[in-house]
Length: 293
Image 1 (cartoon, rainbow, N blue to C red):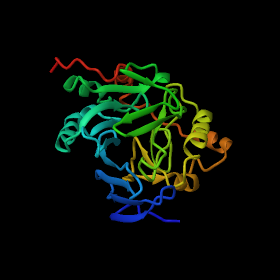
Image 2: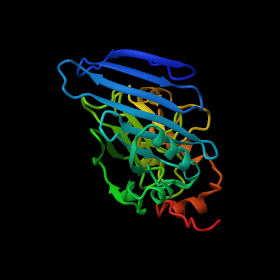
Image 3: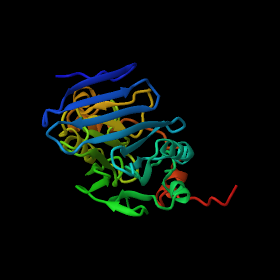
Image 4: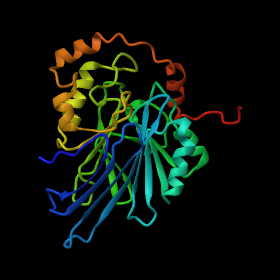
């Protein structure tokens, strides 16, 4: 099995896509805490279709939140989306979108966050053409509500929606498409459901340790083991994992369900300091009264 180095240096690997036998180039910088860059290209003389994913992993240090920028680099308009934008870094993210010549079409969230205010509302204030997306199960406001098995297209690429409740009732995981014209390896944007060697808490917002365990084991751990795992947060400087790594090494979710539930029940976590501000704001897409100083 090909092992891809994850941390501390730049890796450049060329290998064959197992389904199409087409060459795949992976370029990823995995220096702890720094923005990630990855370019995936699948091509073959027999294939008329070629795609290229533009990808950036961005960090907001106060809440240790990752925001992900994805775009179809071969589409004429380079349509793009942001996953889990943060209000404090909207200007940075939009500047990057402009610098890369992308057209931002969606600002999407994995769930209603309790530790920061989403940047979706501010993005829409600055660019009304951008549409916000969140799960229907979240009961929050947005332009588009997604449900399990829905697909979110940006150019010729798409994200598949998987319901992964447990941290909150409305949590979803976004997974890049499965197909010869989609990025390889696949990528799972897991929000707070699955973190690198951890998971989100389950003691508020309709959380359930039983439900979270089932979500991870049926919706994420069933993905190919080389699927890249990109969480909404990391507090130790880690940037990316794989499904195979988490199945083997996750200290909570590698255990049986009853052991996992005991672990979660014994955490005794403190009340999120921004919860009373973040949750109400995020229920309305992070829209704020921007006229106030």
